[in-house]
Length: 252
Image (tube, rainbow, N blue to C red; front, side, top):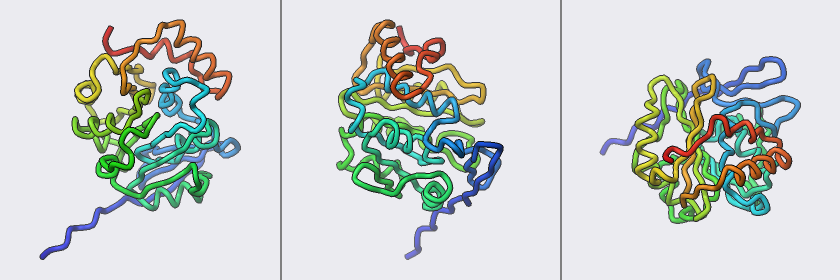
């Protein structure tokens, strides 16, 4: 009986440029970043946009809500949810070396009653009954060392993501890569969530296109969204008011 060949995981390293430290998986592609003097702030624009779910979530209920990240990266999203939003956080990461790097180089706090990092294959872990219906904010940023396309991008994957969410929960996903097909990915997300539940940003200059999908579709008025954006900027410092020029529902 032959043994299954172990997965070959890339090496993990970092570089620095001025006040910013970058995470790499053995290539020049940036997998995450951190301000050296502000380790819990967000440097990359696309990562800020991954928090668009805050537009649909009552601000008074954010503290203590459950955020889950698929793909730890440089732990930027996890740290912001934990430190700034005061949420309960679960991160699922395949590569133990990434977790080691986040704890050693990127100021990720140790696990405690509000923070848990699970070393597992996200595609399998999210099918566990433990998580179903428990996640208020699911943030998906899954790339290999070449950053060519999302590692997980199938109809079944997005269906399992929807099953994770609470009734008011949202998923945000980073669609990026030289080999990625934005239109095909959005079609798969719509198949899982329904087209009326999907919102999308225009791509950043770097090509990151953030898509948001709601567990329960809603269409807040522009006034309500602008009010939420103002509250997000005032409370947490994210540039939410700028999002409205580049963030719209997929269908009218």
